[in-house]
Image 1 (cartoon, rainbow, N blue to C red):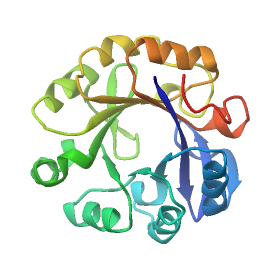
Image 2 (image 1 turned 180 degrees about the vertical axis):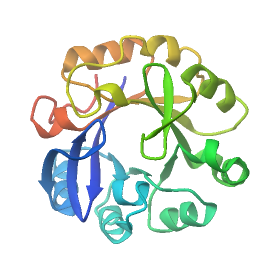
Image 3 (image 1 turned 90 degrees about the vertical axis):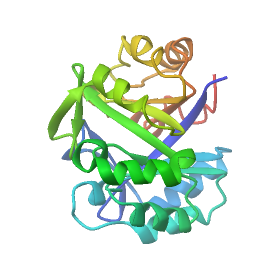
Image 4 (image 1 turned 90 degrees about the horizontal axis):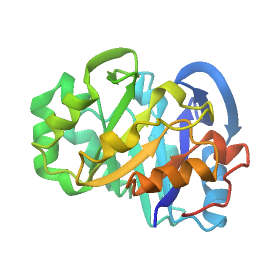
Length: 230
């Protein structure tokens, strides 16, 4: 069974969904806590949160995230601008269950090593990628290839990997048709985000041995609202 996890991206105190991460694109959804309460009322026990302001060094939305943590979700994944063990621990102290990191592997390996050693069982690494290249620093710079990133991560004991297909993020244009090639090389928990449009996309991800699919635009536009697993 593959679980479906709604996402809440927060910018300037509001829940938003951008297209390919570009500021000013996409839609403004509203109050993140009310959005989270609605998700919870639909029966979802897990939510994925991205603090876009923290990712872009434009402040943070930690108070809002703390409010979402009080709603009652069984699992809450949070990513965006978590670049130190101190911030990771602070997020966990709010009631967050899993931390999502990405750029830190390439920008501060020493800190990443420390984080994986102390918090590995609560750590997801998001491979944010497009056209075979891993993207870092708010998806503005290329790092290594996806294959090289997967190889690097094999050296670490972490909870899992999230494949974020930036090419189609926020577009509902469909998933990465090559995801099964990447997912077959990872033997930890696997998540996927980016371009998911309908049930057929979810079924393809399930066939690719993805454990959970993160939905945003397709959830808020209604096409996958209420779908909890396939």
